[in-house]
Image (cartoon, rainbow, N blue to C red; front, side, top):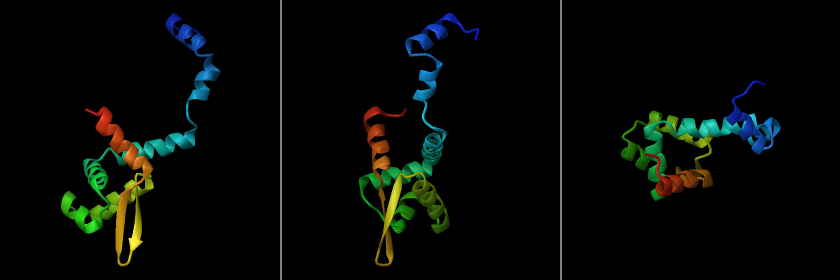
Length: 116
């Protein structure tokens, strides 16, 4: 390859093209990562995640906090669940939502590092 000297040197220092390739996650892992970023790209879903960082909540409370209809809230909760950021447990006739370890990690990173 005809590469700029800086790039050639950088590749050489890191063990060559194969080393760079091996440092990149597998496609399947990148797809899961993309789902998380897509889920977090909507302000309403961020609002839900931050509300759940305060305490576990049922949909009726989240509906009030986010000012959403039942169907819109359900849509957003489904996306967050598929991304692995939240989970829920049935409790009698209720469903209680909470952050997963991944969801908590996001909130903690945001609080300590900031994203602005």
